[in-house]
Length: 304
Image 1 (cartoon, rainbow, N blue to C red):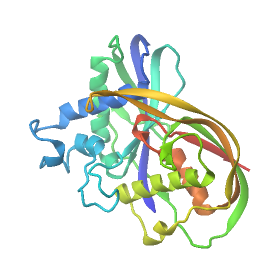
Image 2: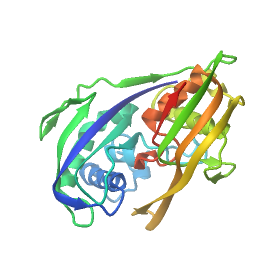
Image 3: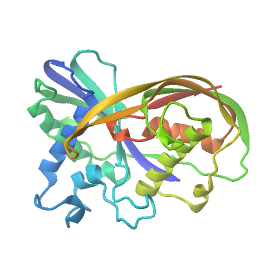
Image 4: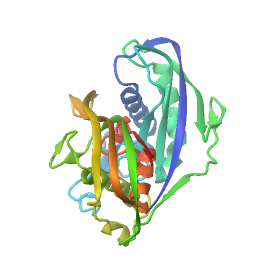
């Protein structure tokens, strides 16, 4: 399994203190999509799925992510997981004068970074939140180095990072205790429903599905990597989880969406293969579960 990715850190500075009445990443995702669409769409009367330009359009690739209905990756669906994930920066409360976040781009999405930067510059001119407080993109960093030449130009000569992991049947394992922190709501179905009542096998299968889908869509997937069977020698031995609901108004569906998931800590104990430890590392980079492009599924872990 291989996947190229690039974490890009944005720093925003507001004209004045902005009252936060919604999750900042939810709002930033929306304005990014809105401005990409207005900048890139040259066939406004066409639906993206039917548009002859959709294969080369930044908006279509990042936000519509169209698949053929007869695809073998997510059978029966004509939309794929988006090629980016948001990660929240410092915690906020009530009002903010500045905000930082990371958007991690996968595969071909890295080529569209200039469009993403321009979309946030435009969003800053329009303002955010209920009071439409304007902001400027103060800096953009990759590997803790600024990529801004000036307000009109960014460095695009960037080296992507690489995820590479390989599954081996009957691989050696090592006994470990791993503490996992779910920093933003983790949404995935176990036994047909979203809940905090999941097993170690449910969780590892969630991580594997996420990694597999990203590699199939935006990287490389070897046949032997599809033979992974969920490890039955792992157990959740401690758990302190709560359900946390987030809300987002979908302009497309014209309704308020409830995006709830598990947050908190739990400990997994058992025999881990190198492949399973690598899946945890991938989840730190790419987030896990559903709605990762809203900043959900962000996690960290520590082992001993």
